[in-house]
Amino acid sequence: MLGTASAMCGKYRNNTGILVEVKQDHFIFLDCGEGSLNQVVRLRGEEGARRVLKNLKAIYISHQHADHHLGSIDLLTTREEIFKESNEAIPPLYIVVTRKYSNFMTSYHKNIQPVLTNLQLIKNEDLIFHTQKDEYYEEILDADRVRFVDKNVLDEFQKYAGLSYIETCRALHCRDAFCLTLTTENGFKLTFSGDTRPIARLVEIGKDSDLLIHEGSIEHCMIKDAIIKKHSTFTEAINVGKDMKAKFTLITHFSQRYSKMPPLEEIENEENVGIAFDNLVVNPSNVQQIRLLYPALKLMFSKEYDEMLDRSDALKMTMDRDLDMNPDDDERQDVDYKTELIRKLDQRYKKKQEIFKGIQRWRKDMVDKNKPPSPEKFEQLSNLINKVSPDTGSRSASPSRKSPAARSTSNSPPSGGADKKIIKRSRSPPLVSNIHDKLLKIKSKESPEHSIKSERVKPATKKRNVSPPSPVRSSSTADIPDRLLKVVKKDAGSQK
Ligand SMILES: [Zn+2]
Ligand SMILES: [Zn+2]
Image (cartoon, rainbow, N blue to C red; front, side, top):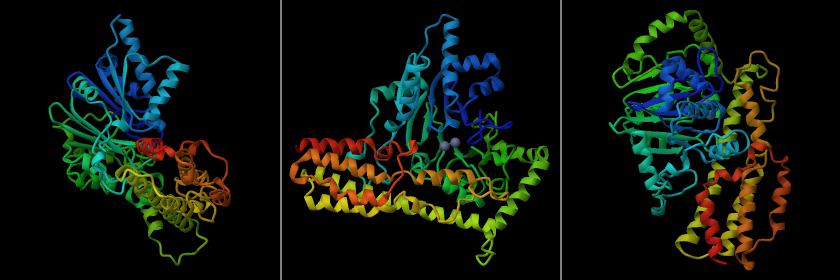
């Protein structure tokens, strides 16, 4: 474990980075936050790090938050230098990354520094098996039991990296975030959650894992913060491990609240669960011994540990207070504020699902029944979008009172900054306006009698009175799988 912190590094924890020795001299990085290479040098010495880089087979990046990938360029350039120094040919290196990240790499290569020497790209998106019922699909279709990675490419990669199987699924975190499971040639199954809320699909793909590395950013009493920031609590991570019957669950990605060590109340009595710390090296035979270290860790950080437990108790009391508390109480307001925010986020999520289901039904009509939707059907979908759009992602997502982050209170929990971020995001144009535009474009190309005049949607757009697009939402339609858009476009084209 090269880095076990979330968001930013500290003195005791670096950003996320995991080095897996799949078999002797076959290494894979699972995420590499900034400083990951330095961590390898600290762990294995200069010669050891050189050996790792020379035998590096793949780098996997779960998502594009900086704490998970900023060390990758350093890895690539140093690796190349090492081969150049000894005049050796540079062997291939697979990068298993999101589509978005591969675009970033290409742009970096073109405009800043050449880094793509002898790299083979595999996209996380293409390693998904489309068998899941997710937010986009109302039901499982036979046609969806596929994945898009080229079989020959995949076989070659697995053989090269010493793997017998690899699969990803979408995480519930930011857009384009993924979870991964891999099995080595020796049959060791390792599942890595990346950053995510607990999700059923991860339990399915990681079933019976030998080792689950799951993020657990904060204590369970802070679950509201976990929901808002789309991370998991310790207890949730442990439960995912139990649900998938993982032989051992290693919790990582700790908030800097726990820079030295996390409170162990939720963790220490659980069998087959352990906490990760930087430079921890586990293998199938020693993983159970992590728990034996707890007394020593508590003693080593005794002052900080006691302070942390006091803080934790105070927090639990705040969360448990009765509703008849003084309404002006800042802490009470923070709790209410978060509860309201979660309700709004949940509402927005459900409405989004409704829209995708509408599109899915429309698509089914086009594909299965081989006929374009009737004007009535299209009208229905259009109405659905119009009905949903005015308060989807609108200002109403933010409660009327000021965000705790905006108030200058000294006792608000340290999560205030993230709340502010969410408010900002929720003020950008709703996702549905983009979908609607896209549908209208497809529709107007399709046939004149089905085209909807743009005036019909104008009132809704006007009513929303949205602020100009922010960079955060600039590619909102990325929430719709490309595949779906492609099918819709193709079908629309074929009916011209
Ligand atoms: Zn993270
Ligand atoms: Zn993240």
